[in-house]
Image 1 (cartoon, rainbow, N blue to C red):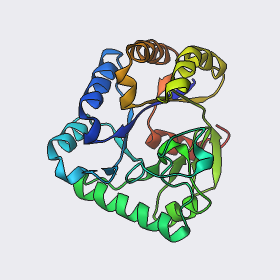
Image 2 (cartoon, helix red, strand yellow; image 1 turned 45 degrees about the vertical axis):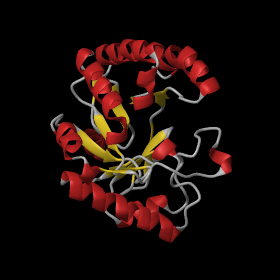
Image 3 (tube, helix red, strand yellow; image 1 turned 135 degrees about the horizontal axis):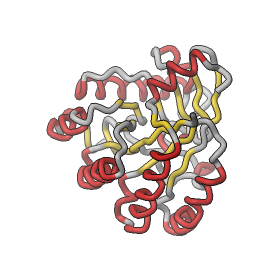
Length: 238
């Protein structure tokens, strides 16, 4: 059966209210398995350990926690097609990549007690050093916009992402094309749906997410990154 991973990105106390709305929507749609992509210190202003009630709330979901950068800020000019000042790992040197990931793991572990095994870079943008550093730190999986990579075997698995842009002009086109992309990717074994807190400023996006989440629940088996990791070990032809 075809599978899907539902991801809630940018999980940070900075977006507390929108995160709550997203969790409510997932519940209403009957999505009982999803991944929380946590930013340990969003914009260098919101460290998790200063917000214990938020941490308690996300741990209470009993869903897997995936590391999603450290502060979610940065990037280079060439990344502006995909993001605006959120490609945190783009352009970092080897030592900068290591220090950024080390900080991220330390803050996440201190606040939640979770040692991450999977990493999704902000805006799905990495750098030439990222995978080597992740592997050296015992990460097992890194996920980009078009594929997921199992680091132990250096094997990539096609996995397109459905998401909505929150930049003014691109936002309109992403909403219009959302259902079309769902049909376009229907034959892929593994599909990812990436919700962002800022989607919940827009009623059209919330309505469309309700439709897409309900549809994916009917047509695909929902899995976690942990299950993907287990199944990909057994089925490298995924």
